[in-house]
Length: 271
Image 1 (tube, rainbow, N blue to C red):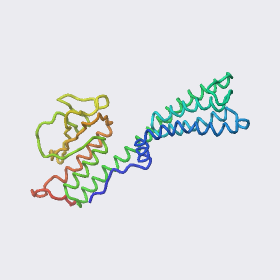
Image 2: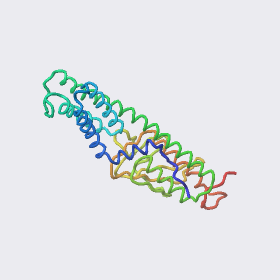
Image 3: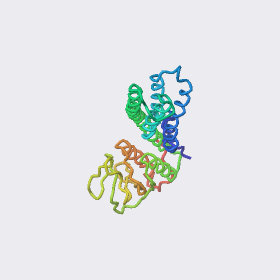
Image 4: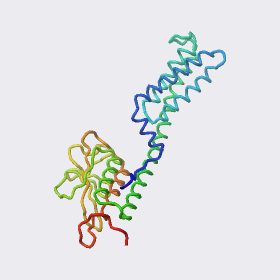
């Protein structure tokens, strides 16, 4: 059996877990400042408002670091509201009488929003680098599987099909030996051609009204193709993801070359 080759680092897996519970994360980000301000309200004489504000900023940073855009602003707005309610006079009322407290609340909201965006940008950069590392590991592992020649061609094709779905975040992928015309094609240079014209995938996304043909080549010849399906929603894979998809497809090519003219049944062992 082929073991799954695209293995994302733990931080990427954790990010996907958070994304699958977006609503819960946003509600938690909003509730955190409420709890913190309620507790700090019990120690008003001993805690300066400036120190309390700095503590709330830490909660905002933690919320923003989840990578969910709404979490940071939710924590920032909640911090400003509950800072006003619990920590400024008149206490336990939504009113602020001192100019310094008004400035602190406004700055808390503005700084929180800014920090949220910075943290979100940094997390996205880290997640992108981790994903690319996972894609590279997947290509190398699949190529090694083909070279070892220890798996059947159908199993290898099924394995790569699942990898393509994961890398491109599409609905489905299937292998096809046919040659009937397909309206859209993904070329070796990672460009997508739709109805004879280049398609800007970063702007328009992959076509949703047709399958997308990804040719499998080996030895300068076409050995088959993967048909990519993305009909339920618009996905916009990056150019790096498209390049990885092309590389994954071409790792199957050598397995589809019949050894000595025989019909391919298993991947060839290296000579």
